[in-house]
Image (cartoon, rainbow over all chains, first blue to last red; front, side):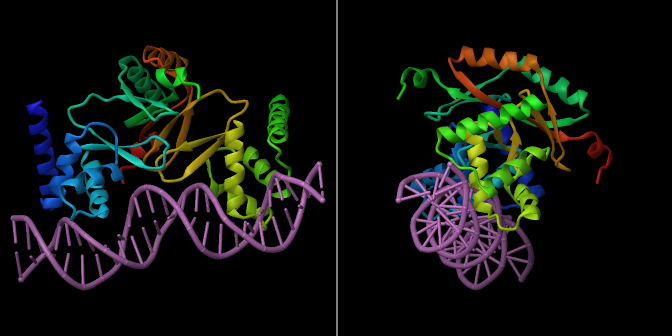
Length: 149
Length: 149
DNA sequence: ATACCTGCAAATGTTTTGCAATGAT
DNA sequence: ATCATTGCAAAACATTTGCAGGTAT
């Protein structure tokens, strides 16, 4: 876990110096808050958490910072069909996919190596050099199947 | 092929009568254009095609009609990360997934039953009743790998 | 006649951007 | 000093919606 943290900071530091980016109060706070909050955060979610700690941070900066993290590869942008982009930490995590409950919005993560293997085979067959992929299964979670409202 | 067409019209007719919907010049033209155009159309794409045939059709109506087709199950809404919703015909087609070239935007469709089977198993393991799913592989297509611009 | 539909323009919700001021190195 | 970064408000998008007039059955 310490390794992951050190690794992340290293990647971020390198990325920032390579791109002439600076460390600022807002940036640091946003990045810190993002990486210490589990889940799939929308910019709005993240903004409200950040503002609880420092009210002098604008949404625009949160958008800009998350784009930065996304470009540097430290965060992944996800789109679960609710109209807003959500971000999740990318480093020190295995690749995984999602089950999404269409009633309550619950998101469950899962990994399946055999699916990944098959995906690679498919890509190869079509001559694609795949750099990323996403897979989402939509339906009703256990609880929502019970509660037929 | 004739079966598919007949089947589609039947489903649509039933859906429309069940929901008290009417057949109109705009609606018919939009639906017709949509089903006779292959590919993954954005509303903007579809609108421009429709307007070439009848300039008196507004975007709003195209949006409303595509939502209707989507609700009736005759079209699937897709989101490939370029910011607009794309629609594809749903009937008379096997379920399939997509390979998307991140440079030229090419979209290749594929099917893989073994992946589907594994997806079902995953969902079952987590107690989900899956109603739909999507899987997208992003990368460079054969041509774009060659042309390193 | 009675709903339903349409076009239009205004509204929405999310994300981006121009700009002058501020901040980091 | 220099150049990146910020907040703000305005702009940009894709999409939705209210409403008055038009249309299918």
